[in-house]
Amino acid sequence: MNVVSLVGRLTRDVELRYTPNGTAYGRFTLAVNRRVTNQNGVREADFISCIVWNKAAENLANYTRKGSQIGIQGRIQTGSYDNQQGQKVYTTDVVVENFDFLESKSSTDQRNENYQNFGVPTQNTQFSSPTQSTQSPSDFETFDISDDDLPF
Image (cartoon, rainbow, N blue to C red):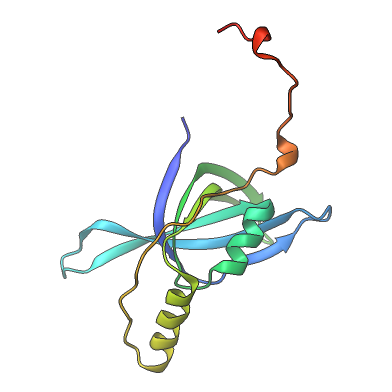
């Protein structure tokens, strides 16, 4: 089973791009706090590379920005490529299948403004919005089945 659930903050705006055939995808890094603190009493964070596809990529790019808190569900995907020096580089990403906004866009905007102007964050009110799915309607087929055809 390959299942990942994370809650964290975007370290930068989602980088929205399109494949040559027009499929939207977005790359971002999610800062996820660890449960324990270090020797100095500070919570450390892990920085997780993520990718999201289709309409969900466009929604995430349009309604979040650096610092936005989101929850994601997805799966781990590994890969590799050869860099310019001919060395093999291994990659690990979370492929986002669903996400939730955990704060309003205005809260994110206000917090970012306070960081820039005063360096003091505001307290955020959290809420959940409907889950965004990366599956498009064309991924599903409809079946014309009557109740008499079902075995139960």
